[in-house]
Amino acid sequence: MELGADAIWLSPIYPSPNADFGYDVADYNGVDPVYGTLDDFDALVGATHEMGLRLLLDLVPCHTSIEHPWFRERPDLYFLADRPLNNWVAAFGGPAWSRDEVSGRWYLHSFFPEQPDLNWRNPEVPARMGDVIRGWLDRGADGFRLDAIDRLMKDPELRDDPPATVAPLLPLHPEHGVLEHTRSRNAPDIGEAVASLREAAGDAFLVGEVYLPAAGLAQYLPSLDAAFAFELLHAGFEPARMRAAIEAMHATGKAAWVLSNHDFSRLPNRVGRANDRAAAMLLLTLPGPAFIFQGDEIGMADGPGHNPPLDRHGRDAFRHPMQWDPSPNGGFSEATPWLPSVDPAQRNVADQTADRGSLLWLYRDLIALRRTLGEGIAFRDSPPGTLVYERGEHIVAINLGDEDRPGPEHRGIELATSAGAAADPALLPAHSGWIGRLT
Ligand code: GLC
Image (cartoon, rainbow, N blue to C red; front, side, top):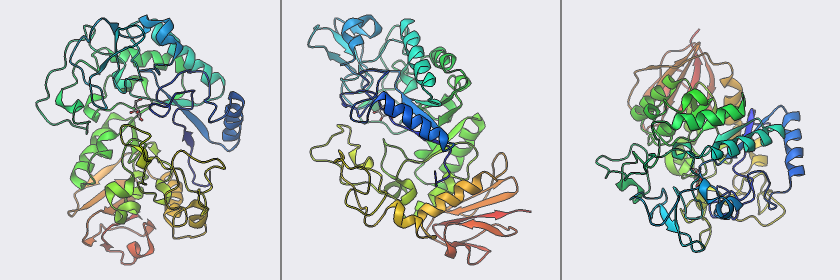
């Protein structure tokens, strides 16, 4: 709450065997005992609302856990066949068809074999998912992050994916990237599946995880409040690519800005420690909702992960627990977390709260200031390594490069990434940024 956020997004809390850390759901209507009970959920909703925050859950509509009772009781809700029906490759590598040892039949999975895909062309699937949505909204949830929805509808005839002829626009697992996913996801009528989620959700907030560039989002957007801007997340911190990604996503009118999440290396590892403040300024001066991955606000980097790995797709290093205080477990929990703390003595919320010049304070100041920025975004051409854009009465100047650059004219700096960044009003020092007034 001190951060100034409006809402919390919880990654999946449902009972799960954790083959994919909750993204393999065994009961859509429950809470995994490792997190608590439905009563605990109700208490969390109550406390969240009392603080003026909203609570978003993570809905995983594309697949269940193989341990979900539906998989045995209602195989018609899935894709089952006597043999693999096509050449599709799973997102984490390996074939998208696995043999079920119990029935001897083959089933389709877009992700791990423990995550059989639901067949959204069976009308009972959207109907059941609608019940799930209504159930959580009745309990007080305010909306959902919709997981992997570009996988909801596939080619009706399940035809082969053709070989890829160009490099993927967003990074993919190398085995997955050998095919162009024209049939295994993003079917021409996928908008109908997303519309059924919207119908159940009413006016609750829906943000879609659609792993496509901005140009591919048209079918999804009518039913969503926002979609994550993955093109920006993967723009490599190269200003020209970032500007193009921001302009393309802003043009959709439904950008949810994001620079890091639980699936990718943490910000300091991708943008360089020197740029963590500039990255914060960029994320929080774009128009529309922005998502902060827990730990980014104190500058947490990738950790050692776990040995042996917990996540077979190699994401443990990005998922170490939040560090609230300098104690050995960072004040995260009284229990032993799955993954250890990384560096709570060096980096934690308590210490950074006490230090007015900390990264955490920059996040707080940016979140407060962003509410005063005007509509829209207008980029100006600017020196190499920099991004300069107007937000109504304000101008934002960010230098991601190693060299100091001249900054644009302004009528006073309102917020800078550090005291040094604003020392000379005509200068935009390397790895820094500021927000100035235009009037
Ligand atoms: C999404 C989630 C990721 C998960 C996958 C399968 O991409 O963000 O963590 O592994 O979907 O559900």
